[in-house]
Image (cartoon, rainbow, N blue to C red; front, top):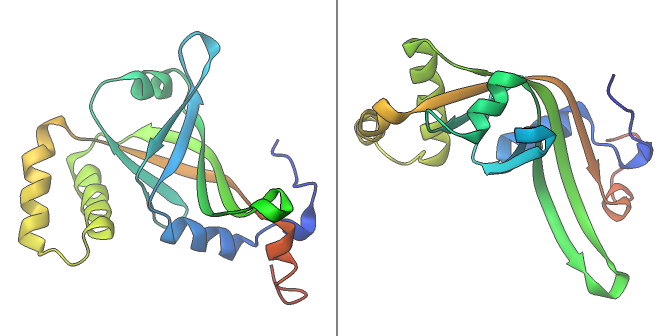
Length: 167
């Protein structure tokens, strides 16, 4: 169902893909939007053991699309160094494919948003994080994407720097 990377030497290992997702702070979620058009939206996220979490409002284009078709992809760019002299960029990116669901239990929502808040404000106090969550609680929606396929690739120039056998 999912295509293999053509340029296998440039492929990132599953661990390297997980590392990109762990350190990433934003990416683009793509879903099947209105009228058959793709709908891609930038989001902050949390990667946690094969699942991606996103927060959003309780209504909108993204949620309508997910209710129609939960299949989605999520792309994170880890590096994009433009090299004008070579007419290229030294890039590293990961794409996750999977199914998105709208979390509905209060316990699931709270666990996900607390982890997300900790990722983006690790130095803040627990009480400040809890206050921020409570302030937004009534309008908060959390999405969970179960990753079914993960693919990562980097520029051939970066791949050449890796020790042989390490991906």
